[in-house]
Amino acid sequence: MFAAPPIPAIDAEAAGAARVRQASLTKPPGSLGRLEELATHLAGIQGTAVPEVRRKTVVVAAADHGVAIHGVSAYPPEVTAQMVRNFLAGGAAVNQLARAAGADIVVVDAGVATPVASPKLLDRRRGAGTADFTRGAAMPLSDAERLLEDGVALGKTLDSEIVILGDMGIGNTTAAAALTAALLGLPAEAVTGRGTGVDDDGYTRKVEAVTRAIETNRPDQSDGAAALAALGGFELAFLAGVALGAASRRRCVVLDGFPTSAAVLAASRIEPGVTPYLVASHLSVERGHRAILNELDLEPLLDLRLRLGEGTGGLLAAMLIEAAVQAHAGMATFEEAAVSRGASVGEGGG
Image (tube, rainbow, N blue to C red; front, side):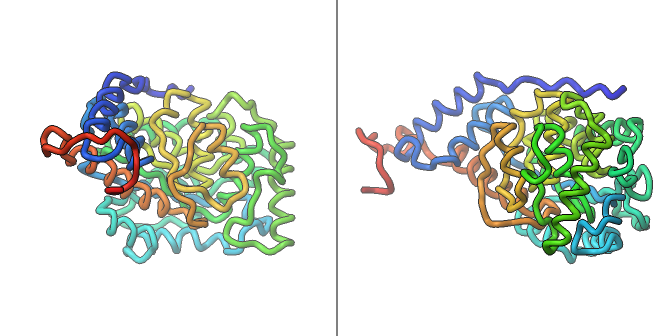
C-alpha cells in the first residue's frame, strides 16, 4: 500500500513575519495585491520571513490513454510520442516558456505507447498506455502506487523552490474529467470539455466515455490512489506523487491546467497536507477546472484562455511568483529609504 511522505504544516510564524515586512516596505499597504499574498505564501512554505527563488523546474510527464480509441481527441495517439521527441529537441511551447522563465525541464515517460529512446528522458513507464477505462480499471492499483512512489522520489530530489507540473498525453483530459467527476460527485457533462478541440460528435463520445468509465469502475471518492488506478493516467499518477514529494520538502507546487489539477485533486485525497503548498497558475477553458480549484480553495493567478498543458501556464505563473519574492526581498523599508509613511492607502504616487 502506498504511504504518502509526511508533509510539514505551513510555518504560520514565518508567514506572519512576512506580512509584517510587507507593511514596512515603501508602498501603500496592499498596493501590490496578490504579489504580496504570493510572497507571504512562499514565506510560510519555506519557513522564513524572506523567501527566495533560486531555481524552478517543470516536470512534464507523458503517457498514453486507452480511452483514446473512442475518438475523444482531435489528435491521434501517436502524437504523444511525437511531442515527447519535440520536448527533448527543444521545439515545444514548454521549452520556449521555460527558457523565458529560466526554468529546468524534466521530461518523464510514465507510459507512452511508443517508447522514446533518449538519455535526456527519465524512464518511469509502467506500460504502453493505460487500458480502456470504459471496460475496467485504467491500470492495476499496484501500478498506480508504484507511479506515486516514483513521483514522490523525484519530487523529493528536485533542488528547486518552485516545482511546476506539466502533462502530455492524448486522451488525458478525458481521464481528468473522469477523475474530477468521480472525486467530486459531479455528472460527466459538468466537468467534460473539448480538450484538443473535438467537434460536437467527438464531444458527445467524450462525455459518454466518462460516464461509462465512472459507472464501470465506481471508485471510492475518499481514496485517491484507487481513483487514479480506476480512472487516471500513468502520467497523472506520477504527477500526483511529484506534488506529494515536493511538498514534503517544503517546495511550492504550481499546477498547470486541468489534467495536472485532477492529479493533485487525487493527491489531496491521499494526503490533505499537500494543499497549502499549491498555487493555481491559471484557469483553463476546460469545463471541470474551476470545480477542482473551488474544491481545493485555490484562486488562479491568470486567465489567458490557455488549454495546451505541458506546464505552459505554470511557467508563466512561476515568473509572477519569482517577481513577487524579488519585490518582497529587495524593496527598501520606509526607514531604510527615509520615506515618510502615508496615512491613506492609494495607488502610485496619487
